[in-house]
Amino acid sequence: MKRMTKTLRRPDELAEAGLIPPGRLAALKPVAARYAVAITPAMAELIDPADPHDPIARQFVPDPAELEMRPEERADPIGDAAHSPVEGLVHRFPDRVLLKLVHVCAVYCRFCFRREMIGPGKPNALSAEALSAALAYIAARPDIWEVILSGGDPLVLSPRRLAAVMRRLRGIPHVKVIRVHTRVPTVDPARITPALARALKLRGKAVYVVLHANHARELTAAARAGCARLIDAGIPMLSQSVLLAGVNDDVETLGALMRALVECRVKPYYLHQMDPARGTAHFRATMARGQELMRELRGRYSGLCQPAYVLDRPEDGKVPVGSNDLADIGS
Ligand code: SF4
Image 1 (cartoon, rainbow, N blue to C red):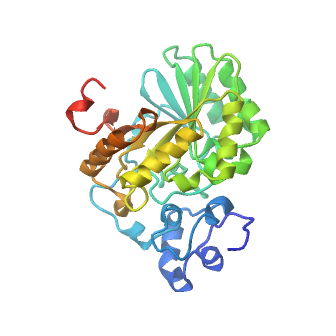
Image 2 (cartoon, rainbow, N blue to C red):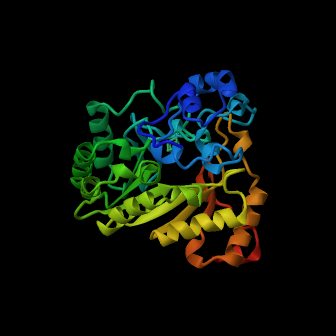
Image 3 (cartoon, rainbow, N blue to C red):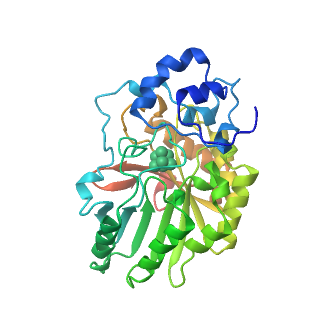
């Protein structure tokens, strides 16, 4: 495949790049009209177009199955909206809030639980007024110990804009921890520059970057170097992955992912049971399968490679579902 230079956003660009056969164009146009598409050069180059089961393509190339909705699927599967006191903020638990700085991402995952709220055409970033209102809300509540920057993907912002937000967070004494949720270190590693690492580092606060990665192949040499830039700058990294049928729902693939993360000094944190977002049934592995995988993972891989397997429920947030065997007790 020839070297790519720009993010692919339309089905005809995917066909031109050889990622879909031209015969699929008509079926994919309505999918792309409903749910945003973006595949960065780093991810497009990883896809093997000759492999109909390529796990990278499966995560980012749209599929007509996305227009098949199931009755149990919801527009807001984890119930963010019910816990949003001011624009851009989700306050579900007393000690932490989610601050959604942007509604865009570097790539659009076909299984995204916020797929109805993100993408071009949705408001791009919080306005200056909305950001000030969100920060004022946090500043007025001493119980808020941790702020999670999310979106969209906050690392699509420039280092200058990120640094400005971080400086304002530094001014809130009771906020001790800032967590940044992102896919950028793998899907667009060139954005992880020393300037970005400097923007994230905040004297007096603990800053963690949580990388979303679902397959070991995403940890390319460039991605590993990007993670190293953050970690060497003093920013610890954790990971979150989603259990995805046809991407990582076998123990070898899942184990290889966890090992690749640990090798990059990224501690596996969460393995998510997929949220019932609309049009994502073709990605869903059963919870029984997930628990079986967790048992197999524990039997064969180092303790460092064990994430917590969790289910996100609108009523009470993340619930550990573990491996459903006696060894879970007290673990
Ligand atoms: S990067 Fe995260 S928020 Fe963005 S599309 Fe993927 S899962 Fe959704």
